[in-house]
Length: 404
Image 1 (cartoon, helix red, strand yellow):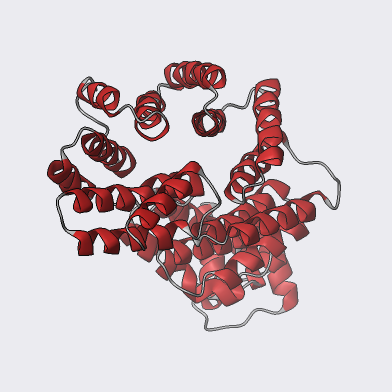
Image 2: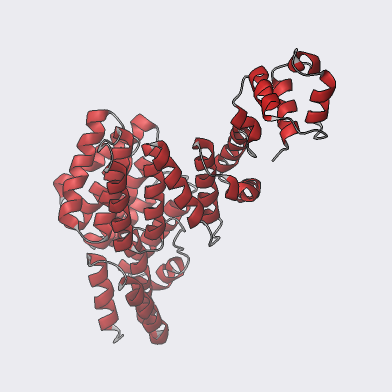
């Protein structure tokens, strides 16, 4: 980053000291100038003296990366990281990359390694893991447990996004064990994060009984500690589970909770989710295509400009049109549905994967049997990777109907 002389000059100027004032009585102004310009090497006695004049530890002068320089770099990369822009991500990675071998201790080094690893992953580069592991180790040494936990959750979520659900859950539980193995205490925010992701992952591996118990505990814990930033996600999972179970009382309850949360947090997506959920229930659970179409036509404009909602409502309209006998129009819409990159949970994937089964049935009705069988094979192959569900049964029935 900088030479010893440059660090001394920077610290002197930060403290608004002239050469003469910094040199004081034990060093000449000329000698200090030579040191700052890297034309003379100070003795340890001189370094100790200068460190005292500059009000820093000698180690900060000797370190190849000073604490102030690391803090400045961290501030810069934090801003780039928060931008959620790929060009900014590239810039941050390029700033940190030359320094990675030198980031060996302290919070700033750990955070820079964490950001570097996370951005490498987001940029789809294969060498993200060593930096993340080193960050985790440094946080552990510093006993900064919330950040240590955040890195552990990130590692588990990487496996989750790769659809290795069992491995993701095992990783999450291992990381939780590591964090609690010392003091046994986890701060409420971190505890709630572990709760939430364990709920999602246990549903993903079809451990429904444990997931349901944990879901109720997580919601109660959130209310007890008045930490609400995960509550919307927990309510949505609970409502979706009620849809699958056909539990109208529970669904009504959590629908009200989602609406209350949406108003409280000014989260319009939470409110839109309840609309989507009811339309999906009519289509997939009740077979009421006419009712689903009416609900779709009643939706206020505009639909949120988010891939998840745009594709989900497109999917539901295609299913409803199939159910009302408008096969060509339904097929045209279903073929436009794209699974957004952020969709990874089996609950959501199951809904999207059944769209190929609906498209297959549309193709069958208009007489294109070859295309229908191709679509049914795609649906069957995709659904085979996921836990058992009503969607899996629908896909299997469709495949059997088409002799696939």
